[in-house]
Length: 316
Image (cartoon, rainbow, N blue to C red; front, top):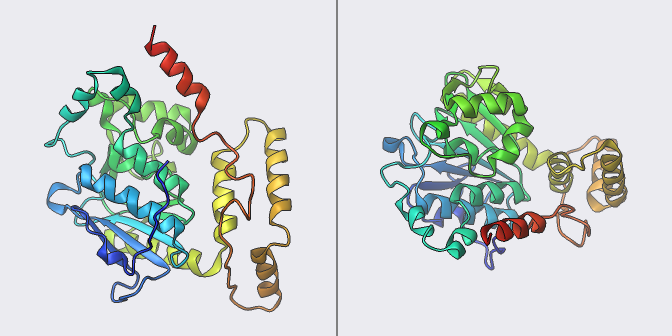
């Protein structure tokens, strides 16, 4: 897991990564705002992903996660596409070189997966505005987003079986959780592109909008609502409770009971109840950390047993 940033930026517009545009909401603001907009910015290449873009997204999400000034993130694409996936003009030859030693293969972590984990671990909600086609890593990396909305005319797909590759960006974990194992198997087996409204993939999105512009506007509106009216602590913990839920209802009961008790009487709980009774807008100030939720995260992020087994198998 990437380390936390040591210094917070005076402005997110200063983030300089080729292929990415970072702005405040509203864009005219010179200082950091509660909502940050990330735009994949290679419109002539359908926002195809390359190295600097992965590095930049990981850095931005890790920074936003620890920035108390920011309370929500919107990610979208410039031009007609959200993202067409990996830039195939760059290719995969750099990865082929990793196969020269077992150590280099073992240490490699796919770039899209690093972004997906940064989004998943981010303490602030992420809203993905899919304003046009989204394919491959351009889709898998946003599966951990809190909310995904899409332009009703967009298409999306997982073309790995048509490229001789496999799922990446932790999508073997997230995809079946979002649309079910049967639909997930169908869409990855065919490797086809589907209208976002197709029943096979529609479950990836919470709503559909009539135009690309409306899609981004709606995403910003949702982000602003989350930033102004919800507790970051409650939101993050509830997302994690559902994604990293124990395997049985009894286990879920133990977990939610523990989390519920932990939040009772906290500053955000007190403010949420008080603002409701006083019929005013809440002012939540809580943050997710070990001091407020000492047992978070409750799942094994290193997945040590799997790693040890993989290393053992490689030596056979």
